[in-house]
Image (cartoon, rainbow, N blue to C red; front, top):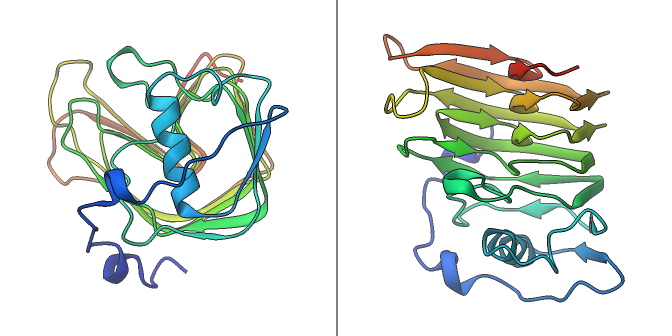
Length: 219
């Protein structure tokens, strides 16, 4: 459960994981099975770089085993939309597996923290447990849904919100599945548990929900 090892295991972050722990792979026939933390980190890098060979609606990633991310460097989500980037356009099937030990804290103006961001495809059959996110916009699965779907997923996480600037707006969004979702997005058959909070006496208005923080024209 969430009271387990995240605060003990993940606070010690390897300073080299941002570059040295990635395991390269090539997507063939629009599919790849991820089985190691290094492959997940490599996917994050290629999507961040805008490489369409790793990030298109035709691609499906499948999780082939549980992943323990304790101690790995997780400074941003897969498909971070910060600074005009395009989000996660592919699909991700957790196949009933669990990702544990994600730890991310940001004082960035946008503070976008989760496993994914800008999801326009489908993320399904995935569990995220024993993880911690602290920023302005945090979600257990995704920061934002851009017309995408989260289905048959569950989370057991700690997430906190704090407004670090007024550069964008005054809102803090914290949601079990997604910090916020746009129109034509869906969350189907999902569950969340854990601790969701905002900084006491902090700036801004906080939108905190078990499924989603802010819903902007979403169904």
